Length: 174
Image (cartoon, rainbow, N blue to C red; front, side, top):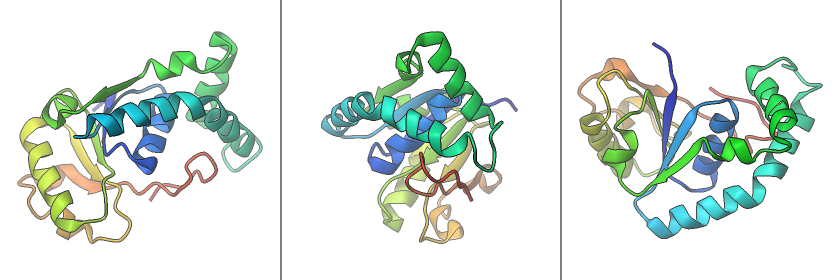
């Protein structure tokens, strides 16, 4: 399976960082939050901090553990090609509708508050709206995956992808 479209559910601080990093890697990203004002604020914050986010990412990783990572190479190429990162921002889309936001996703990453019932409810909705082939993942750091995915019918498509914060300085994923 080739992943092209990634949906991040939860447009808070961590969700927006995951979205920026994923867009930088060349994926089409849809950031979903039920609150349109949060989406508007997040879009403005991403536009305001994107350049510094990417410059920090490059500075922290070009001489680090993985100097030839695809994400780093994509960032350097985008900076050369487009004289900055405005083109990468075009990979980011925003939606207040969970069902619309996940409808074309190959990968859905949930990044909402660490409340079990909220996450279970969201995954139930995601599973009903996302393509059957989509991979569903939680960014949870404190809840058991088996508890978060309890309501999911097709457990074979569920897992955890925990991004360490802040993403631009810590290139860690578990």
